[in-house]
Image 1: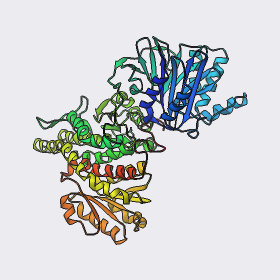
Image 2: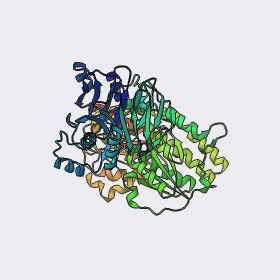
Image 3: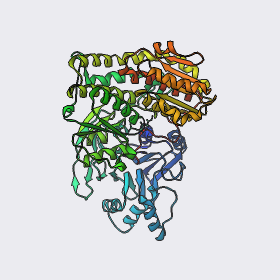
Image 4: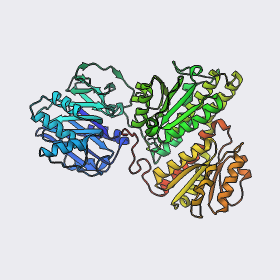
Length: 605
Ligand code: F6R
């Protein structure tokens, strides 16, 4: 996590560093800082909290200079204090870091025996000490950097300024992404294309282990062995403009309302509306695939759970799914014919990326279902499966989730066709149903007023339970995650049948239970589970459709979603669970788009 930017510019950099940090705030917002090489050497300014706190400090004490580095932090080692904020500075070295240095304690102990004094609790400061010691030992900047990198284990992207080198910036990447931006007489380093987007669209992605020296016009790139290498310069479409909220109060609200469009765009990559056929990207032949292994984190994992229902029921394709942070430790035996599919909005999540690399190392064919098409996962997987949700800024994933579910539904149909389980007529029917989903998602917005009116009561709860059956049990997990991450109310999601095996003990008059149950074959059983809760006094909010509403018992609150086919119910029923979390968080006055302790892109394991 953490976002970094570096500019070797021709004009003052302070405001440009801040502009870029605002674009990177999705990576963390515990503290921020910049260091600028000015007429009197390198000066820095740091502030705990969001970038606006740094901005207000800079407005009183601006930093002059045309070369500088900046950082927005998601705290790992040490609290979100100013002392722990980057850039860290030791002797001639000022640097910013994204990642985790795993052997920092060992290095710190070694440095301490040599008299090093530490000002922060971070792992990053250790890098600055090691690099400064190498410079003091007489090594040239690049040699000192290489010697430092050789001592580090863990993950990092770095941007470094060295006092006495007023037109040089060093960078390095291992495990965490770093791009080089090529401008007009100016050069840039950044965590991603978005960071350098306002300044250039010409970028090169550093490969794993690369390090780099940039000045105003050139980038000298070296691989981990120190050999000069060239990395392809691409023109990327990362827009220069910051994504705006428009008339919405929060990005999350906007992104919930973006979903008809984001799902529609995503589906147009996988379905031909004229022929009614599913389209697959080159290299993906489901006829040759005997098993699917899905790996993802958080909300993307819940999309994968829905995907498992779809692939198994429509395509009769066996699916294993794992949370990425645990996947490798399970050491699953590899079956020939397995397609490994990682699912990720950012395409940078460290655990998911590690899962992808593990699958590759085992010889599996890999596919990345990603929203950021230039991300590390997209570049490393054999097959890219894009979602077209557009930039998702709210930390709580909404439109990326439904785009993932839409793409997985289309892929499951395609797999069913390829494996001979879906006839041409059925394909036509299923794709028609799926193409209706953007309209049905729009229709679900009509639930908004009813949902908003439930928020004041729900916001008083200390605990909330969600349950559903079938793919709705995955939505129960997603609903609970949405609520807890933005409103800080403790929430848990369960498969409805599991309640009586323990969680029902939690039910009392003050524990609201949200039941997600469209009418259909699983409805009656879910209603029985709901009765078990009612018998114990639990207040219920039932999210169902018109037919389900007609069968709902008296005395509970009912939200009626648009009638829809079971195929698209996960898409349509996502809307009320997202809105419920959103309005409860607004009711509580929470920071909806940047909830505490979280970051949009989780690039540490
Ligand atoms: C929750 C949320 C997270 C992410 C998870 C994976 O709303 O957004 O749980 O889904 O951190 O992120 P990606 O999809 O970028 O790999």
